[in-house]
Length: 354
Image 1 (tube, rainbow, N blue to C red):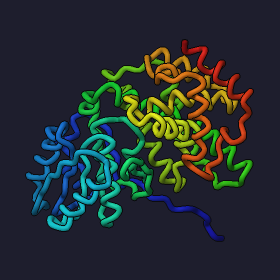
Image 2 (image 1 turned 90 degrees about the vertical axis):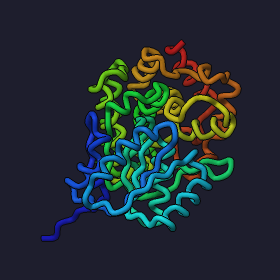
Image 3 (image 1 turned 135 degrees about the vertical axis):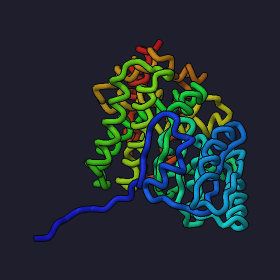
Image 4 (image 1 turned 180 degrees about the horizontal axis):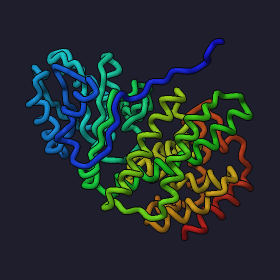
């Protein structure tokens, strides 16, 4: 009798614990991730953390040559520069030690050069730490591009606790937005017969609701950071299982992309935006937890209304109008929504957060 199954690509190793930076080389060896020429990619502001990772490799008997390269941004010219380093140094693995931009450049460059990549995030700001997606800036436009899932995801909770609080709030927001994203996904499956993966959706939603159920944000609490880190890792894995960003990206992300196009200099971070927009989209979706989400954002002093972003209702309408065009062909609750529903949802969703 035939056995029917599907295969998915997952990280070989995921470790989430305290004081892990000094053990990256050792932990990789435990999973037979043995490399002779690691290239560490990082940024200047966290190079002291990357040095701890480097020290472990300097004492590794398998390492013959080691190089560290600093980047300044996730702009495409930085990718090209790292490719030049690869041509000269000829590494057999890229290790990204840093925040979202470092991880994205590492993943994208590794995919282009068919190299394995190890993710060592020092800031839990989004689900890119484990996802098959990288955000790269091409001139004035940021694009999400498909990449390979990291071979390993190694998270030092103690180091992440020292990250800027705004970055950590962004991670919380990105995780919470999974609720709206999965609602859009199943709606598209029912209306357009788009492929839907139940396992991926369950991973995404479970991670988001575990965060929502935590009630209080406490970035000084290692157990809270554990919930955040696990949720972001599982979100990235959900995208890998689904073969699409659908489990973690829906109407709330389209609104965020539109806002970024209209207000490219906004100091708010992506995760902060998508969480706030999720309150509105969840109300439109008749998601029962929309009010709990609104209360969570307000209670924990996260961005909770458009006014927190400095936009009024008329400007919100401009963002709403632009949103579908940021991802053509992606069905969401925003498709064909009436002005009356928009006004009601805006009033209801954001009145709780005043």
